[in-house]
Image (tube, rainbow, N blue to C red):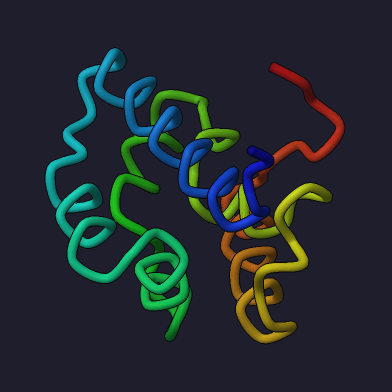
Length: 105
């Protein structure tokens, strides 16, 4: 059975959470939001307003902005799941943090 884009997004975000935990960054609040609202709804909730997503600052400090929700929201693979406003907010947060879009991990 083929996964939907939303299911692949949820799986990728959870995998990123596992990587965050390996870096010592707690993800219990992210996981609780995902379980309560579903991954996409939780992501959209975190992209509202101008506050960065949970874990963003810790990931910025670790040099791993590639693991942020914001990075997933502007990715070619998952960008279509988000509104222009959500993607623009994610992009603004990443740009403000100096994210290098040409880097790969």
